[in-house]
Image (cartoon, rainbow, N blue to C red; front, side, top):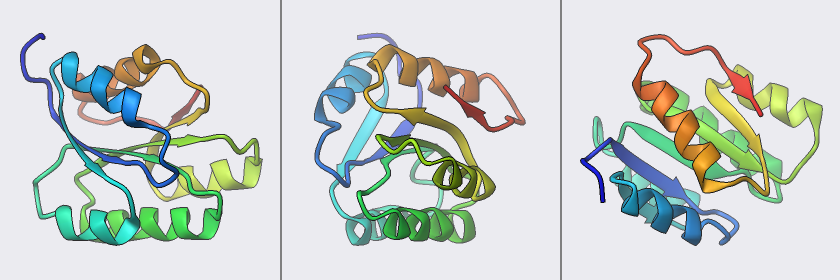
Amino acid sequence: MTGWKGRIMLADLNGNLSSLGIYLARAGWSVTHCGVSSELVLKMKPHAFDFLITDMPVDPTSGLALLDWVTINRPEVRVIALTSSRSQSLMNSALIRGVKFYLELPVEPETVEKALLSLVDRNSFPARTW
């Protein structure tokens, strides 16, 4: 394991990100898991996390509501959204809500870490899609 890199809230709303969490923890990130939006809201205390990685739920309305909550209540948290949806409108809606990276599933853990590292290294970060 390498040195500590940052604090991540991994919102595994669809139940398919456990291997990503293990990879990031082994790579030196502090990873906290949650499985539902309400659990995330309880755990997201001010300045408790640097990053939120979330899989966009099958129902995009709840995923966008989560992004709205984070934007309003925890604007300092940088967000990476993972999705299996190919919807351009969903991607645009997520980026408008402040998502820094919007990645299509399946995605390699190394790609997610590369996105995280690029956010650590910048003071201002434009939204990106891969």
